[in-house]
Image 1 (spheres, helix red, strand yellow):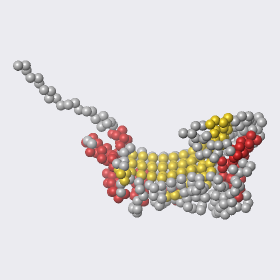
Image 2 (image 1 turned 45 degrees about the vertical axis):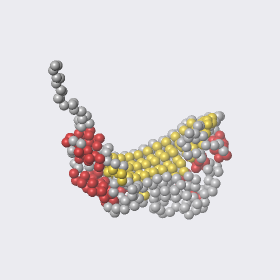
Image 3 (image 1 turned 90 degrees about the vertical axis):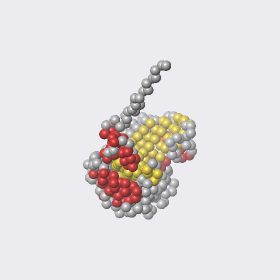
Length: 417
């Protein structure tokens, strides 16, 4: 009888824990992408993970857990324990995002507490997304030598919170869906500023003072248009005066703004602290190299600014919409072209929101035959629209008078998907 084969009693090979073998610093960074609740739960994975959550490089304080809403009281209690047990290591990012609006009166108190904790831990990127329009951070001043990026969404801002003099490293500021009650957005270090779909109930304009700004976005502000102070280092700016802008001429008719005349309607009459003696918008952005200026019909701010139109001495590219071509003699368009001595590219996006346009017309400017008031550097002119009608023909006739898009205009039908 043949001998029995010996069974292999050796244990199965162990699967290497490659993630657990990573350095602590790398695991701290990986855990920072998880919501705080999920990051803490990793303590049960193995002894190696027991305390890693205490020193993550980021905190994501979210009103959602496994995609389910978390009651604020539950989140508050969780955060009370976390802030006590967590190590006081530096934080790269902190995100505070609450879901549905809460009736809890403690929301403001605890949001401020979490912000102060983030600042204490030398946070560099702070994001506050609350969607509580009645939550005010007006009496809170940010004091941080390390904060570089701040995103604020869905709360009310006023007073000292908008003064970033005590944040000398702040470079990127985004404000969206916020009630900017009053005061002044002020920072000498700021390089990039975006104010999107915000509003103000104040009769006085919100002032924006950021002399070191490189890029600016002011999109669909409701209320009185913010007053922009000089931005000498500005490279790009995009300004859109949307339908909720209160700088409306009540006597607007066929492109005639009483705000540009002596007999002004009630809305066009300057009020105290309105800065009406200077440009509201154009003066502050006159140093930009690339401009996008869009407005709904009937808004008089751009037209009034053109009364003392500054010189756009560095402007290379300019995009305008039909607002600039609605006046009977296209005076706004003429004025801004005459005050842009080094303009190289002009784009007119007329009666078409895009991004796809059915008709694009491209041409050039003949400086040898053109008036000396137009930039001799202008070599690209684009007209984008959906249909060539009387309004477009009026603009083309105007440009022909300036030897723009001459001798030939090419039309290309673009596919619309």
